[in-house]
Amino acid sequence: MTNETLITQIQRFSVNDGPGFRTNIFLKGCNLKCSWCHNPETQSTDKEIYWKKRLCVQCGECLGACPLEAINPPIDPASAQEEGSTYYKIIKSRCDNCMECVEVCSYGALEAVGQAMTVEEILKEVESDMLFYKNSDGGMTISGGEPTQHKNFALKLMEAGKERGIHICLDTSGHCQWADLYALARNAEVILYDLKHLDDAIHRKLTGVSNKLILENLIHLVEIGTEIWLRIIVIPEHSISLDYHRRCIELLKSLPGEVKRIDIIPFHNWCEDKYGWLGRNWPMGELESVDPSDIQPILDHYLEAGLNATIGGSGFEKAKQIA
Ligand code: SF4
Ligand code: SF4
Picture 1: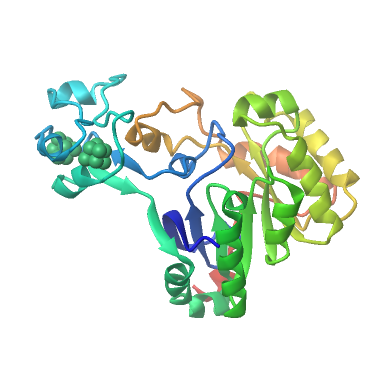
Picture 2: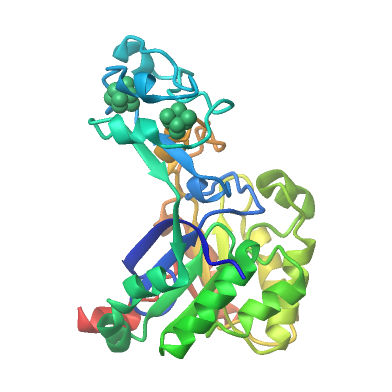
């Protein structure tokens, strides 16, 4: 069984990823490529490097440290900052992620993304917040990336967490074989499950994969009585019409059991910088963020249909009582 895996972040005191205060574990590696992904650093299973060009003074220290000539030579800092500049510090095709360059950059412009951690190391961090979990019905959320891509590791983490009395949420796209999802789901108290788009063609365009497995697995999860918090993303041009959400409601009503709550998640573009730090283009271009107050009519539709829906999906009701 795998002893360690790459983690991009352990995020403490989250209130948007399950009930109460959560410690989110972001596993690195995903089998989808959602265009709006706000954690693009979790998509690749490999270590990566953020290059924050605003901090880079083009001193050239990293160039001298790189054993593989995988650093572009310094250019005028102003040209590197120019909007639309395609200059990127790392030549990815040559880089083997040795991180020598990160070590020598004294300006904080280079940052390693992805740290190998064991289950024990993760749980040590998680357990330091036990008091907050107990007082808010919170716990640990296994996220990503896609946890089912790290099935053995995620399972070990969930089982060890449960043994220590930690409430476990699983945040999954559901794009995997049912047997893999089931193995993890039976160890989770709550599943955070994404409905990215109802139409298969649009789903493929926006995420790179079909929604077939995802919809099938949603039915399976409902059948076995899992507590599901379904996240429905609202994206301009793709999933913002009331008609689209009427169809989502029809789907929810046709399921063989209850979805505990529906979180309507407005698209936002706050993560655009991260794409630049990774040397990638933000796939959503100029698309504006959705103002949560503009989608109240969508929320009203779900509420009128008797569904337990929110905008944004905070699990903070209990947590805020003790803050
Ligand atoms: S060492 Fe840091 S500041 Fe200097 S050129 Fe490299 S990335 Fe830029
Ligand atoms: S990680 Fe290593 S190989 Fe890659 S650019 Fe930095 S020094 Fe060069």
